[in-house]
Amino acid sequence: MTRNSYLYAGAALAAIYLSVHACQSEQAIRTAQYAVNGQKLYAAQCQNCHGAKGEGLGKLYPPLTDSLFLLGHRDQLACIVKNGLSDTISIHGQFFDAEMPPNPRLAPIEIAYVLTYVGNSFGNEMGIFTLEEIEQALKACK
Amino acid sequence: MRIFFFLISGCLVSIMAGCNPETRTLPILGAREPVTKVVDGKTITDTVYHSIPEFQLLNQDSILITNHTFDNGVYIANFFFTHCPSICPIMQRNLLKVYEQYKGDERVRFLSHSIDFRYDSPSVLKRYAEKLGVTNDQWQFVTGSKAEIYGLADSYMVYTKEDSGVPGGYDHSGYFLLVDEDKHIRGVYDGTNDDQVQLLFDELAMLLKEYE
Image (cartoon, each protein chain N blue to C red):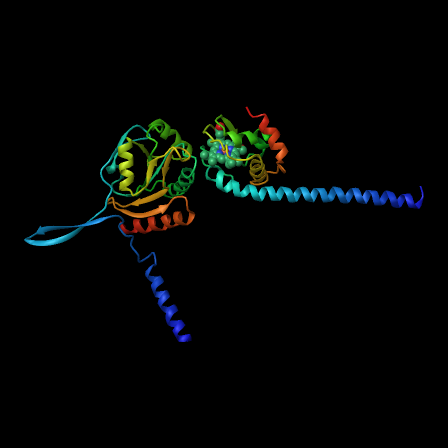
């Protein structure tokens, strides 16, 4: 290899590194933006039941701090928010069977915001819920 | 000019001291009527204060309770329904904090009236109370006919209305009413507002001092 080709390879690596890095921080910024928008929606639409810290209320309203439940049901969360839920679920080993009302007026992008907020607060680390992910998930609602 | 400021601030301090919770007593709220009566040949004028009328309601154990259930103590009343999707969870979350602080202290009781007389039967109320975390009879959950409950709401000065246009089907305000041993309303607090709930904590303690 000539000295020049070393230089080219180095520049190419640097370019790849920079673009990946820029992408990552762009993603982080977008996640933060979604979460900020989602926080407002959460305060208005969810906090009364699920609490300011996602702590829930007794055995009536489940906490949103069970990361294992949320991760395991990631693809169903959009449907839960949109259509509500009346099921028996186990959160932190405790059964809940009250009814969550539907939110028919929430647009898919708003569901993406509020889930990004919930999914990255209260000890959860789920990353961003993109509009595409939400639209895909909503198609599969039962 | 300086001296003037000092005077003003001195006045303010003394005015504020007048509001000191240690020295203030709570007002009796609601309409009052003067009544004249004759005692020992002399005509005197008395004031009749607004008070909560007698009632009989079914509680979460399907037992009829009355106003006398709350005798010899003060109580906090509110209006809610178990399926309420909006303000009730906030109210009940806040009232639960007061309940937990006074749990076991028989001087303080709690009375939640359901305004959903169709759905909230005693067994529904029972399950709700248990899930909320209410474990003794200090906090009563009651149901009754529409006329009884809505009539009482008027006595407690709380707005309630069946309204299919609001989420859950019933419109009502989220007030906590502090009622003393003579069934007079001594305080009204917005049960959805943290500052107001703190005020309830403070004024409840003041009211209890009156009976010490």
